[in-house]
Amino acid sequence: MTAARRKGVLLTLEVATPVVLLALWWVLSSGSTSTFNPPLSEIAQRFVQNWFGELFVTYFLPSLGRTLAGYAIAVVIGVVGGTVIGLSYVARRLTGPLVSFLRSIPGAALLAPAVTLLGVGDAMKIAIIAFVCVWPILLNTIDGIDEMAPTQRNTDRIFQVNGMRRLMWSTLPGASPRIFAGLRTSLALALIMLVISEMIASTGGLGYFILQAQTTFDVADMWSGIILLGLLGYALTLAFTFIERRVLRWYFESKGTA
Image 1 (cartoon, helix red, strand yellow):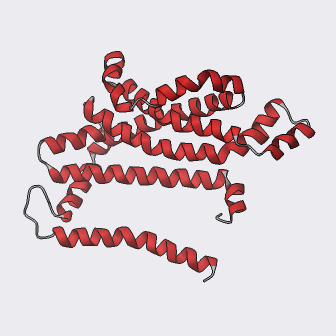
Image 2 (image 1 turned 45 degrees about the vertical axis):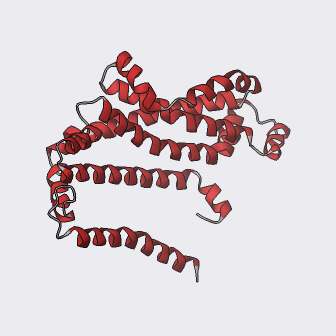
Image 3 (image 1 turned 180 degrees about the vertical axis):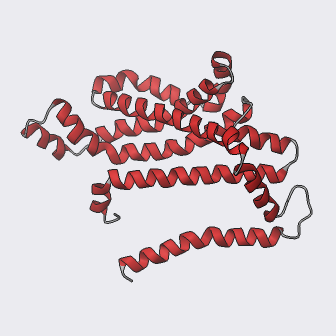
């Protein structure tokens, strides 16, 4: 099988799998009259009513903004902090215990003190998302810099590539596959913490909407929120993969997966 044909088959399977699952859900739930198991047709109708109107602006867009803001803060702190620590053996030894301690604290456990300090507004949610997301990025940046091949370091030394030039053209590109691995992990964590923070301490957003629908036994509304959340995660993953494939094109080409 040629490479092009194999990619075509994989793409077909990727599209067919969710279509088949949705078809099964539609068929199995079509005759349901249970409040707790509404038919997929009713969920789809409610999805259109909810998210192609005013609720999209009042619930979805604030959640998206909080997610991106917290994630962006984590990216800056994680990459910059990880680079500084990764370049210095002394800094790794000094910060190691503190990083290990902080990354071991579950983000959900910090919601109560975060609400006390920052209230229930956007600042609290963004801070919690940033706190949870920063550690995979920070640690992967440190490891990526630390694991750079000795040959690359010796080459930089021989050609006297030092300072900012070495950082921008050798160190960070060499560590970028590990950095992107941390970025991908943190993207999923951002959505998880968004929902948790909005369910526990919020008066708006997707998490709040889903919780309120569950509390009032409006299962169709609840599923419409869950499906939108899943679509958001899928869209963010597609966007991330698009960027990753272009930034790390050299890396994927070297592995034969470009």
